[in-house]
Length: 385
Image (cartoon, rainbow, N blue to C red; front, side):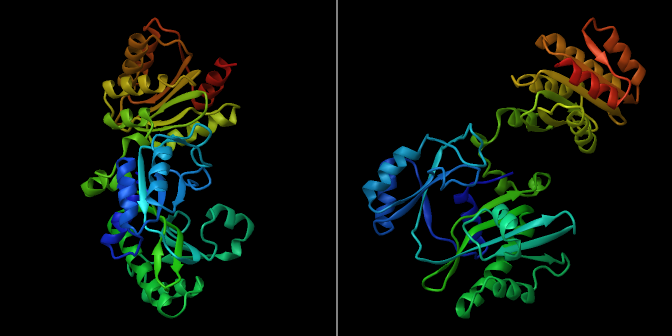
């Protein structure tokens, strides 16, 4: 789960992590009023769950309250296109006004889970304000990585090492070390998957603060954090993903042409890989889970077919806790209710597999039953050619 910049900054402040003040404006008049309170100047920032807002015109400096009102009017409701949104862009529903900061230096800092080491890892660079992927590609030597021992946390020594790596000195060095430890504490206590501060700035006065912030949370831990769930903005999520969450389905929209319904994340990844191997691409990741009901399977099928880009559907189920006959019944009922007009290939294996195949063969529907996963992938790719 992702949250907006203004929400991330609210959270940072509760952990003593310095960040400029600011407020969300509801209309142009309020944008002007907030700017007056800030001394007549403000930074007007469109709020969407994507980076690169500045390059897309979503971050502007207002020199007067009147200019802030004008910028609010232009940004609110605009379709903001950035490198991360794709060509379709995102509609701006929230505009945040931030206090201007006298910037002396721009740095980069993030905490994330490194899959290679299984540890929370700090990434730091003196190249702030630039996408970290660009830094990694062109000047990788400017990225410092520090793995954190989960038993010890970010130690004082490691915090000071980060401060040195970023070239902080004097009071800025001390403030930076405290900043890093507080940020790490937030990461762990709120079950984050990533916290990115870009840019992390040193002001002309020597303060260290988060000029921008991006925080993502582990969805599997949200049951522990109702205060984080309250930040969820459904405007920023795909309609199909929102609907899938209502039925306990793990769904991610992709841009391919073959819809996938699979039980188990690993099997889902293998299914997408083999579709790619045979020359096509998946339209989604959809894991119905190990114990989904017939109703959940039916809704999963319906959600897949809502995508106009889906030209065929591959159902790949290994029946363990989830029985093949339940899956087959769900697919058949969904196909009859919706009126499926695209090819459907089903591969079943495991518990009650023969009952499942019988349900499919006696359904009267043009559903192809595959012998194995490779056969299923070949058939579904051939069906759209």
